[in-house]
Image 1 (cartoon, rainbow, N blue to C red):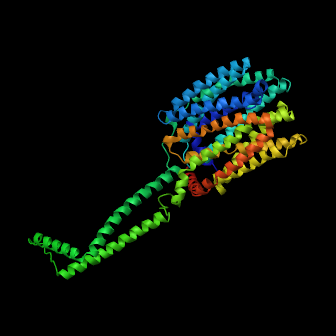
Image 2 (image 1 turned 60 degrees about the horizontal axis):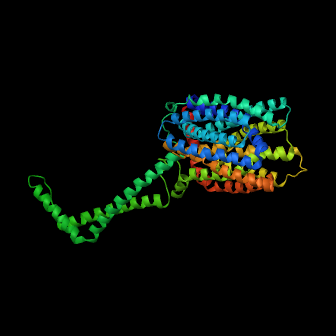
Image 3 (image 1 turned 90 degrees about the horizontal axis):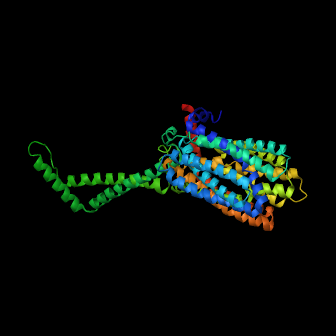
Length: 530
């Protein structure tokens, strides 16, 4: 079965198992008290603008935490940063329990900032350690599995919240929200304890099968080839000077013969021969050597100028020089795309729930049931996305396709839904949009980690977290737009932004086609050895 080697090998790694367990517990607790209930509570206390500023406080703080963790994480053992995340998480839980009782916006802003620091440090550190613990060629499967766990764990939290809210009257009263949030917060330290069990020693040695190492090998190939070209050019130039100066050639030949005769008087038996013969011999030899070196130089130029590559050295991958440069820029391009998508998502995600609750009067039961359906649908979509990406079109083309589908459903929510639209239709669009857009995270992270070295993964994990900055800013803007124009106007703006973001990945998807083939070969080789 596809992915069986990863199941047999990667899950035996202590870090992989513990990080997946941590993600499950952390996500389950977040889904009880934060994912949907917190925006409703903040909206009740301060309106749509307060929802935006609350998200901004978390996003800006997450940038700070991710920056520190990214810088320190590549210099110190990753476990040190992870222990710091544990302390931040415990502090955030205690502060939020107090804020939920006080019900004041300043207290909620402070707690959101604490959670932002926690998420920035924890996400950056655990993602870097997770990437260290999974070899190239298997990241697509294991990252997608991890993302499925992070998605399905929300079903647990939503189900718990649904049952509790149903028992308390199935309404959005502040008292009901307070009780559910308190229970979810009290359970959250269970996830934080798992962080203390992670160890750097459990991460294997650096593998050499990903895109990063292929690009590195190609650049070394070019450096070696350029050195050979310079050496050949010097030799060809020297031969050309000799051939163009017969007198100099004859003088050198005569001098060499004289020295040989003097040194061979003791019985060397060396015969100088006539001058004419001595002249023609070296000349023919020089011509042959010159032609041979010209062929070598010409062959090298064909290799560089025509962008040919030593395929045997690179595992059968044929790369052009232009494609190498695009692949070097690939992680930057993917991260930039995540930033761009976050600009639109920040304007929308916080307000999709409020759109259903305030404009359509959706009860807690229907909302939580919808999000449970979204979590299950996201897991299925993630599985299909990984399979199609690995076996047919490549990971990035699959991501582009799914994002276009999800964006289209959001555009329908913005333009085709009115006050007379049946709730069932609205929920179908809502579920389809969220399932599609949420299914790509594991795949894009696997692409990034395949393209960067082990020594810089903490920085790249932090770089991914920087998307929370754009999220924070756009969430504030979305709050003001929602109050002035309505929720659907923000959905339309987000749809346009997401369409543009999907097409930004097209050049990277084209350039990464050969790399995807190479990683499939690595996976097949690994299956044969496991």
